[in-house]
Image (cartoon, rainbow, N blue to C red; front, side, top):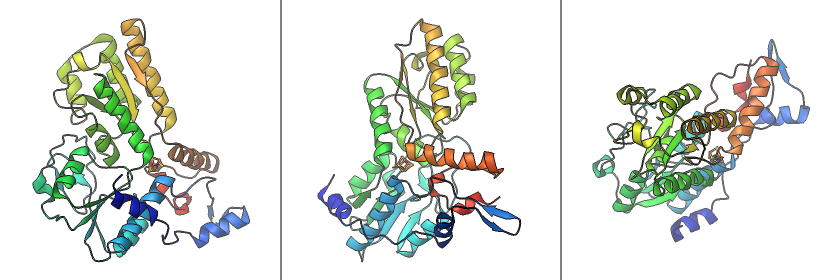
Length: 329
Ligand code: SF4
């Protein structure tokens, strides 16, 4: 950690209150709030996780330390429009999610829904930055190629990447060092997964989004098959020159920290079984539980609300960011 980052961290206590009058009322009453035909329940666990809280605090601290500087935030501090609006009100310019294929920042665009995963960041992508500018890295991190470019430009970098995310990165780097392909359970267009995949630099990775993707991989591990068809299925979700015939020999599972633990465990178990069937043992299978507890707890509490109270839970991406209004029936 640089001395500048340390100094910002030590000033990171003065954040605006993100409390809510509605939440306070629900907490006090211990009962759902009923309004007409609507009942509002409070999940037992919700709100910012420690990683996002730290990222918000560091962004405020950066504004205090650099009152006159241009400050850019790469992506979103959190997928929550209210929080992002407050950050922008500080004079922090939020650059939209990046379109990875071209390596261009697309301000205000939403992430691509299809798989896209080729890193092609150029120095010119960031040619609007100067050494005097401040760049905030969000809690889910950025690809290492972007970090290298920022270092080259020499701007002030405020790195809020969460420790849990960095733990996954260490795992992926270790896999690469040992010649193990990282199977990343996540969404290939999600910023965190893009950043995680970038850590496999010099080695190989494959991103699988769910159990059905996992089954494609298991089938290939057990039976082999048409490599081109396999690569078509995982278009944009694997490392350059990925060859399933070679690179599924030794595998290690890592994950986007916000995936559901049960699904990750299911995926690990299926992959281990496939390797065991192929090799007669699991020495070529490696896994580490890197699912973040904060996300898991909040998701399970919300899912419990949704199953016991018939409340919709269709979109739980970044539940840590959600305010209780998500729980409206
Ligand atoms: S890894 Fe967990 S604690 Fe860290 S930012 Fe993500 S959800 Fe929050």
